[in-house]
Image (cartoon, rainbow over all chains, first blue to last red; front, side):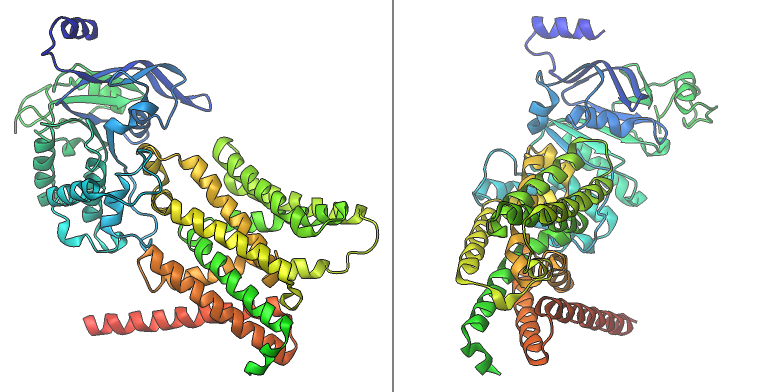
Length: 264
Length: 275
């Protein structure tokens, strides 16, 4: 199917661009296989949810896309270049929160760090940097906190700042690692609405261990537990889920057997 | 009290304290916020090998110390970043190796090493004008580098991984930061000695961190506190005929405890008011 898409792309300029391509990717840490033969294509404006148990390799997969983890075998392409070169296209919201709540940095400074790293050393942040930082803070609804020390915010608020920091680079791809872990349920809807808006501009991958967290907003779902079960659709069979979680899974779907999260 | 500064060696000592305060106030802030206290201690101790090398070659030990401390900073940084050896293990090993190398070099050097103690624990009353010049130059290097890479160092200290993802060359900058620590060790050596360097790299920054959430302000407060502790320590050591380096560290330590108590009480009051 990948091949078909590629051929189509060549024939027709209007075809949606492939932003991420993983081909037969294997990752191992000290002889322990973490990711096994992963094949994945993601296209512009797609919103993919990846679910899987803790330790299933979800964070590792994101780090492969970011070039932070080197695969032992296989190929990774980010908009046609290597992950290290493609970092400028990728926005990343890490799983971990602050480990030092007393770190002397304000929300504003945190967001601006997203504008670094384009060889602009020795220079102060310019007008464009500041305007973009203001825009993304408005988008996530955190402008009023911009002078605050980040450690003084709640975890949910910190997450929103980290999302702003990832967006300030105008990424083509947004990677979110367990973004909902510390966001209250009422805020989750709001959060998905933000992502729904962002989908116009970028591809989004959201990983989570929490099956119920994947919402109606995602376009496609994959299951990951060392191996990736992905049918380029929003449907997952019970068999896939059971393979992923290595135990019988009680679904999950609201009324429709053998389908996950199709209708709410 | 001011009449003690009529002597040239006391004026030199005062200048040395001010120059040392600049280095440890600025670099100490990174040591504390990036939580690299242990690696800094490792660099300081390992650089004793450089002092030994200086004796062995019959040159001013400071010319052995500068290349040696920078080398040990780079080696520690590279080992902890590029190998699978746990960082603290690597630091512990290199820490002891550097000291051992220094002892062996001194053993091989002809004659007796008379002022060895002053390199280990500092002797601020023997600071020469040439030492002051070296300290000034190193201070200027440190200020310049921090000025150039302030934003990148902040990003690196706050979130190393994210900084890498946005495309900052984090490994190179981390090594550069460790080199600044190595230079700070050289600046502080005359004041408190390489064994006690770690106190001035951590205490002033740790106090200022309790009172501000801005890195630049933290640097200014740390420089100021280092100068105050240094001068108080110098005066006390002169009045009571105590070792200057150790007295400065004791004053700093007491300062830290007082600031902590103040903060603790203040917080308690605030909680009561909130209730």
